[in-house]
Length: 115
Image (cartoon, rainbow, N blue to C red; front, side):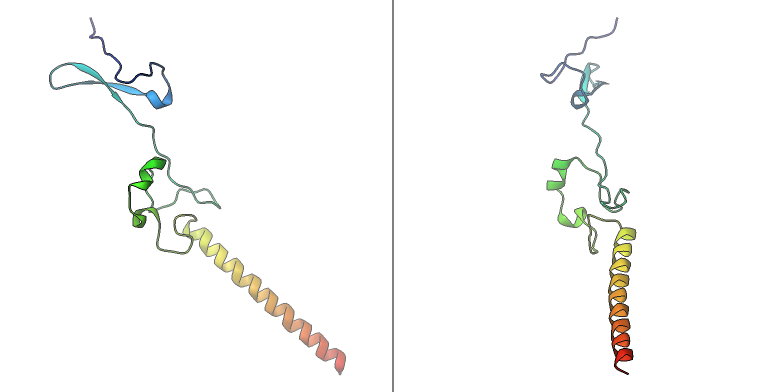
């Protein structure tokens, strides 16, 4: 007959925060090992892809690692992926170019009216 295993925590319910695995100790006893929840990787705020270079941890564990491990050395470092940053820079550049073109056309039209 199988050996009985007692719970190590107070919660007897089979919830996601109370998952456990039966492990045999070197002494031959069976004990429960409580399994932590799986961490999800931080996602890009624009496209939703997992951010490369940033570890997937549980929220409280980000407090224990250094800032260097939580970000990427770029504008919008730990928030947006590289492709989205590239798109933002390109979009801002094109908007500024459109404003300049608009201004040039306006001055040309004013010059044409004076002649």
